[in-house]
Length: 266
Image 1 (cartoon, rainbow, N blue to C red):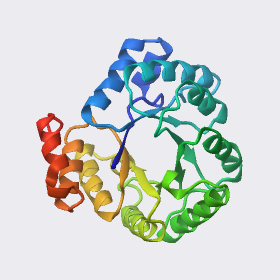
Image 2 (tube, rainbow, N blue to C red):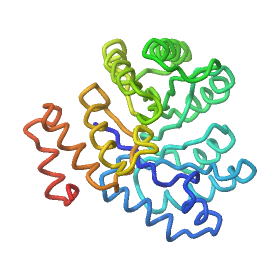
Image 3 (cartoon, one colour):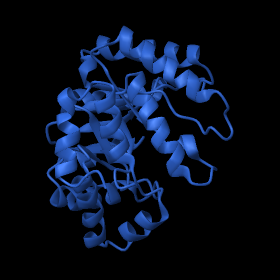
Image 4 (cartoon, rainbow, N blue to C red):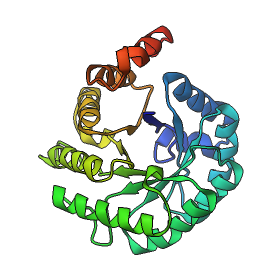
């Protein structure tokens, strides 16, 4: 199954933050339902509007979003207390923690939650030395994380590697390193998943949607079997289904045909 994590319910977005703090349940439920109807397989929940309020906001968000959709949630935080608050309320089959990194403190605080609640986990390719700028750095962290995770008794089929997209406008050549890292990760760890948040690629560029759609097709061709996107963004789901059909990942184009019949290719 291709994993589509709907990214819209994120309190770093001004509108979402305002609505959460107003406790506007109808608005948040609408966001969850829109993404579900657009074709998301998971709904990301990020309550990071204010560290002092994050645990309470995560509790409220989880209760509201879980009422609006039957999809598994992706709990998005570096705060283990906020993550566990959400997990205690809603831990459906397919639930994912977003995220772990190669940072020692992050590993020590997040791995126990992954084991306790038997969730999946997004693994970001950064560590205590920061975010790598090249292919080699990304692969070094990917291999280290895979080793640590397996040593903890967690199978790699529960891991979603994210090689951290950088803006094309300020980091020329970064997309090439990411695509190379995805291809290598797919070969070395075939049981693992690869799911990137791709919208950073277009940061600072007009008509961002054009870059997002093109890069999405490239990621799928390189070996991604998941993405963190806004499924309501114009043309994103059409691009996703089209790329999978063209690349032979959608046998006889049945997913594409079904999506067309369900009105998801608008």
